[in-house]
Image (cartoon, rainbow, N blue to C red; front, side, top):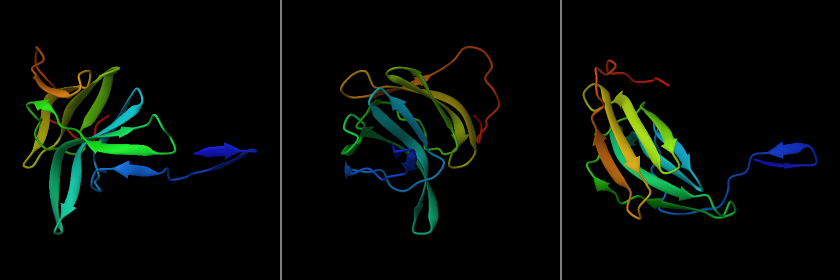
Length: 137
Protein backbone atom coordinates (compact mmCIF):
# COMPACT_ATOMS: atom_id res chain seq x y z
CA UNK A 1 0.00 0.00 0.00
CA UNK A 2 1.30 3.43 -0.92
CA UNK A 3 -0.08 6.54 0.78
CA UNK A 4 0.58 10.02 -0.59
CA UNK A 5 -1.24 13.27 0.15
CA UNK A 6 -3.86 11.49 2.25
CA UNK A 7 -4.73 8.96 -0.49
CA UNK A 8 -3.83 5.29 -0.17
CA UNK A 9 -3.61 2.88 -3.09
CA UNK A 10 -2.84 -0.82 -3.28
CA UNK A 11 -0.01 -1.63 -5.64
CA UNK A 12 1.40 -4.93 -6.84
CA UNK A 13 5.17 -4.81 -6.30
CA UNK A 14 7.59 -6.16 -8.88
CA UNK A 15 8.30 -9.82 -8.11
CA UNK A 16 10.97 -12.04 -9.61
CA UNK A 17 12.28 -15.54 -9.03
CA UNK A 18 10.52 -18.86 -8.52
CA UNK A 19 7.06 -17.95 -7.21
CA UNK A 20 4.83 -20.41 -5.35
CA UNK A 21 1.93 -21.91 -7.27
CA UNK A 22 -1.53 -20.51 -6.64
CA UNK A 23 -2.97 -22.01 -3.46
CA UNK A 24 -5.42 -21.58 -0.64
CA UNK A 25 -5.31 -22.54 3.04
CA UNK A 26 -1.56 -21.85 3.22
CA UNK A 27 0.36 -19.87 5.82
CA UNK A 28 2.59 -16.84 5.44
CA UNK A 29 4.96 -15.75 8.21
CA UNK A 30 7.36 -12.82 8.20
CA UNK A 31 10.81 -13.48 9.65
CA UNK A 32 12.84 -10.28 9.57
CA UNK A 33 13.10 -9.17 5.94
CA UNK A 34 11.58 -12.25 4.35
CA UNK A 35 8.19 -13.90 4.14
CA UNK A 36 7.81 -17.68 4.27
CA UNK A 37 4.86 -19.40 2.56
CA UNK A 38 4.14 -22.98 3.63
CA UNK A 39 1.69 -25.64 2.52
CA UNK A 40 -1.85 -25.12 1.33
CA UNK A 41 -4.06 -26.69 -1.28
CA UNK A 42 -3.66 -26.24 -5.04
CA UNK A 43 -5.52 -27.40 -8.12
CA UNK A 44 -3.96 -30.04 -10.36
CA UNK A 45 -6.05 -31.17 -13.33
CA UNK A 46 -9.24 -30.11 -11.50
CA UNK A 47 -8.27 -32.17 -8.43
CA UNK A 48 -7.10 -30.78 -5.09
CA UNK A 49 -3.48 -31.42 -4.18
CA UNK A 50 -2.20 -30.84 -0.65
CA UNK A 51 1.20 -29.17 -0.34
CA UNK A 52 4.12 -29.20 2.09
CA UNK A 53 6.50 -27.00 0.14
CA UNK A 54 7.96 -23.73 1.41
CA UNK A 55 8.90 -20.55 -0.43
CA UNK A 56 10.77 -17.47 0.70
CA UNK A 57 10.20 -13.92 -0.52
CA UNK A 58 13.03 -11.44 0.08
CA UNK A 59 11.38 -8.23 1.34
CA UNK A 60 14.61 -6.21 1.68
CA UNK A 61 13.97 -4.39 -1.62
CA UNK A 62 10.25 -3.46 -1.66
CA UNK A 63 10.43 -2.43 -5.34
CA UNK A 64 11.89 -5.78 -6.41
CA UNK A 65 10.81 -8.69 -4.23
CA UNK A 66 12.49 -12.00 -5.08
CA UNK A 67 10.90 -15.43 -4.52
CA UNK A 68 12.77 -18.71 -4.14
CA UNK A 69 11.73 -22.24 -3.28
CA UNK A 70 13.30 -23.26 0.01
CA UNK A 71 15.59 -26.26 -0.13
CA UNK A 72 15.36 -27.72 3.37
CA UNK A 73 16.95 -30.35 5.57
CA UNK A 74 15.16 -32.58 8.04
CA UNK A 75 11.90 -34.46 7.90
CA UNK A 76 9.20 -32.54 6.01
CA UNK A 77 5.84 -32.37 7.75
CA UNK A 78 3.03 -34.13 5.87
CA UNK A 79 1.20 -32.05 3.24
CA UNK A 80 -1.60 -29.93 4.72
CA UNK A 81 -3.82 -26.90 4.43
CA UNK A 82 -5.88 -24.86 6.91
CA UNK A 83 -3.12 -25.27 9.55
CA UNK A 84 -1.65 -22.63 11.85
CA UNK A 85 1.88 -21.32 11.55
CA UNK A 86 3.21 -19.17 14.37
CA UNK A 87 6.44 -17.18 14.36
CA UNK A 88 8.03 -18.12 17.70
CA UNK A 89 11.44 -16.45 17.27
CA UNK A 90 13.21 -14.29 14.67
CA UNK A 91 14.19 -17.51 12.82
CA UNK A 92 11.54 -20.12 13.70
CA UNK A 93 8.01 -21.03 12.64
CA UNK A 94 5.88 -23.58 14.49
CA UNK A 95 3.32 -25.48 12.37
CA UNK A 96 0.31 -27.14 14.00
CA UNK A 97 -2.60 -29.23 12.73
CA UNK A 98 -4.56 -28.64 9.56
CA UNK A 99 -6.19 -30.91 7.03
CA UNK A 100 -4.02 -33.70 5.60
CA UNK A 101 -4.67 -35.93 2.63
CA UNK A 102 -7.00 -38.25 4.56
CA UNK A 103 -7.83 -36.60 7.91
CA UNK A 104 -7.32 -33.65 10.24
CA UNK A 105 -3.93 -33.40 11.97
CA UNK A 106 -2.70 -32.51 15.46
CA UNK A 107 1.05 -32.77 14.90
CA UNK A 108 3.69 -30.11 15.48
CA UNK A 109 6.65 -29.25 13.24
CA UNK A 110 9.30 -26.57 13.56
CA UNK A 111 11.03 -24.78 10.68
CA UNK A 112 14.31 -23.16 11.73
CA UNK A 113 15.72 -20.72 9.17
CA UNK A 114 18.82 -19.64 11.10
CA UNK A 115 21.29 -21.61 8.96
CA UNK A 116 21.80 -21.18 5.22
CA UNK A 117 19.69 -24.31 4.63
CA UNK A 118 16.49 -24.17 6.74
CA UNK A 119 15.77 -27.28 8.81
CA UNK A 120 12.50 -29.01 9.68
CA UNK A 121 12.23 -30.71 13.08
CA UNK A 122 9.48 -33.14 13.99
CA UNK A 123 8.79 -32.07 17.55
CA UNK A 124 7.09 -34.24 20.15
CA UNK A 125 5.62 -31.98 22.86
CA UNK A 126 5.16 -33.59 26.27
CA UNK A 127 1.67 -34.29 27.57
CA UNK A 128 -1.62 -34.88 25.82
CA UNK A 129 -2.10 -32.75 22.74
CA UNK A 130 -5.33 -31.21 21.52
CA UNK A 131 -7.65 -33.14 19.22
CA UNK A 132 -6.89 -32.93 15.50
CA UNK A 133 -8.17 -29.65 14.06
CA UNK A 134 -8.21 -27.25 11.15
CA UNK A 135 -9.55 -23.74 10.44
CA UNK A 136 -8.21 -22.73 13.86
CA UNK A 137 -6.22 -19.66 14.92
